Amino acid sequence: HHFSPDIRKVVQILEQNAREILTVLQSVHQPSGFKEIPSKCARARELFCTVRTQLADLKTKFPVEQYYRFHEHWRFVLQRLAFLSAFVVYLESETLVTREEVAQILGIEVVREKGFHLDVEDYLAGVLIMASELSRLAVNSVTAGDYSRPLRISNFINELDSGFRLLNLKNDPLRKRYDGLKYDVKKIEEVVYDLSIRGLAKEPESGVDK
Amino acid sequence: MDCEVNSEGMNKREGEGCPRKNADAVQDRDASANPSSPIIAVFKVFQQELDTKHDKYERLVKISRDVTIESKRTIFLLHRVTSVPNAEDILNEADVKLDAVRQKIGLIAEELRGEDIYQFHRAFTAGIQEYVEAVSFLHYIRHRSLISLEEINARLVFMRTEKVDPKGSDEALPLGAQVLTFHVTPSDYLLGVADLTGELMRMCISSVGNGDIDTPFQLSQFLRQIHDGFSYIGNTGPYEVSKKLHTLRQSLGKVEDACYALRVRGSEIPKHMLADVFSSRTTLLDPEEGVV
Image 1 (cartoon, each protein chain N blue to C red):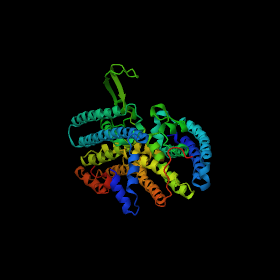
Image 2: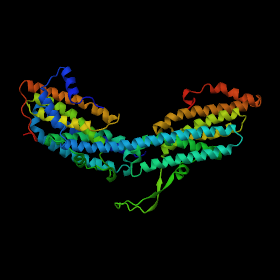
Image 3: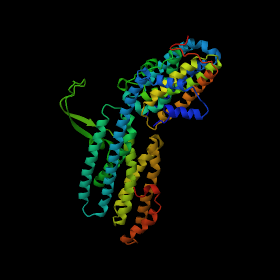
Image 4: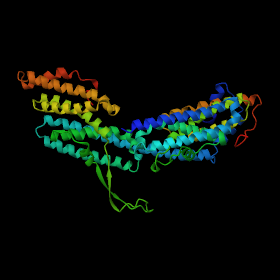
């Protein structure tokens, strides 16, 4: 247990890094922010370099085979970093980041036996946080005059929802977070509905935003 | 499970004043339910991963429950040593019971093979604590001392005969015996010992009722040592230990009161009435210490 103070110090720095990345990405919600999405993603990717360094440092603060003994220390920030990775990848390519890609962005493993890894549940939590962010983005897209983005977000979130329905979740924090997904789905559907009855909805484009 | 599938979900939304063109809605749903979609495919993998983990957790919970039950029964059995002429029979029976419990712990060790034990710790911690309580109780009755964590773990070594993996495993397991160990964590050990003190307190009270006036003094000294050890740890240990410290203080208090009463009044009161002296004190037992 004498590992905890060192772990906490690094986690605090990681949380600070995560806040910085979030600040960069949050600005896409502003009307002026939409054009600057590529540059913001690039900036976020730069900031992830620092995160990789910090996580590499974190790995050294405890015995590698005791990941789950200390997991609670970094669970929150790791989920946020997973969310931020997913968000960046969505903004870049409008696809769902894979667990492997998130691990690559963060410089960690996917398989527990190989070292400090990204748990499947932390990855899924990050994806769900992103779903909330996207429901907000759908709303703000309309305000900014982009009427096609919400439709693409809608298709994407519905697909995510179908995916999550396949999971047999226990009554744990992940399940509670998943329960919030239906509100995101609903919010986005309402946006799409508002657009379609006013004849503003265009055919959803597949792939990258032009 | 989730009751918002298709038509029910749409009805719900229509009821909430958000009608949609039904055709569009169905089209969206069909597209997203497309089984060849990469997202669906990857979530099927997640489903398997999560199911596997949950299944293992559940198996461990079941084994742990068995461990708890058998350990508790052993403890009840051991309490009878104060009231029977031949304690040895009881102790031998307890040995047999605890051997069976150890076999179950071996099953836990098998489930944990290759896993990070802390990922599943909550599934079996209760059972392990109960086992520590039982085995340390037996050890105290026999040796009048506290069993060490090393001694406990030394008996949790299991031999397994391993079949050769037909696919030719990377690990090159030799045909024959394999050693499997289970390590009780220091935290579980402490928590089990903390619970032991409650049983020792009960034993103290009941031994007085049987006219045994030596055991209370021995127990008092022993409990005080344990209590002092826990006090030294104080709040630096796991949270659960701090909680149990409170109960431990109460147990120690009762035992010390018993010794006081014996010292002050023991010579005045006929032995068969000694039990009554303590029944007035023992009515102050808090609910937790009632029948388990």
